[in-house]
Length: 70
Image (cartoon, rainbow, N blue to C red; front, side):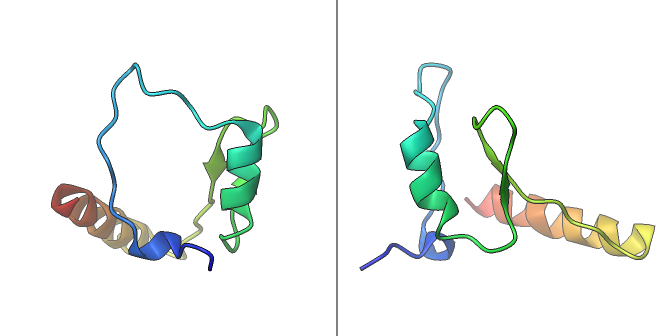
């Protein structure tokens, strides 16, 4: 059974935490929709586009609230 990434909690990391391997990134990438892998194949990212500045700010604040809870 595949892990639903939306249900996982963030785990704090430090500068000593190893980054994911390309294989690990590829496995996790398959679990996501509308995400991309950067050209260096070192990270996953998602681009968000909003019609208004206010919508972008509301989204950013919501992400900040979620990050504080984590």
